Length: 223
Image (cartoon, rainbow, N blue to C red; front, side, top):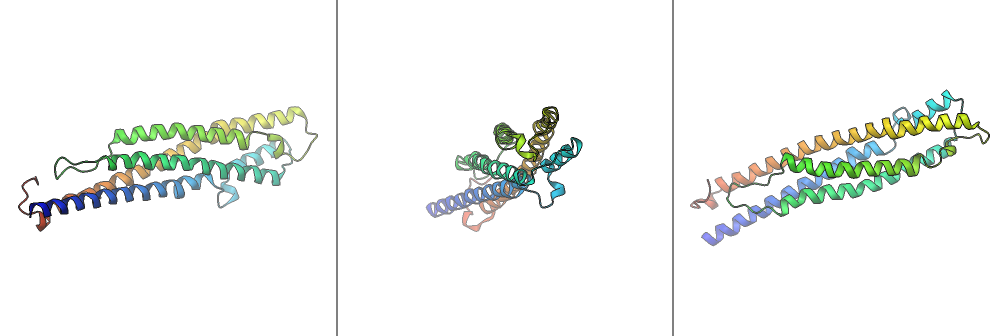
């Protein structure tokens, strides 16, 4: 009977760990595929496109005619590539979180998987650093590499072009960059809270089975 109970408890533990892993995978997928990707991809309405709107504002300010075909292509190249680069962060977050589950080995029946605030903080600090690098690199490579391509006229005065370029670079590297990073951090914070609660709920189910199942009656290591 003791051996049978041990096997059932081991199965319960394995089911618990697999369930938590699945919660992490689903949470991670929702964070990147749904939440963060919505910030990186083309908005459903042109009025929500902050980069395009800034170009239009500057074009009006300096009486510049934009090359809309080039603009759309450059923006789409940026969005496609930054989304692709963020896949590495998606995999990294999942890997770091699942490590906590894979390494879990309870000493007592009431021990459960826990991801502490410090662990979340350490993971997020690492991923924030990588996010900043990805955003900066993609802005530089796809948005700011050749600002002349946004403009139709070939004979634009250098002074006008320089002012247009300076303001656009400033916007992308400061305001846009800051807002995008803050939005991503907020999405991560919300999903961290959701994940914490999901793991807690799964842990409560695991403990309930350990404590209440008639199969474990007579086992004295449940306290």
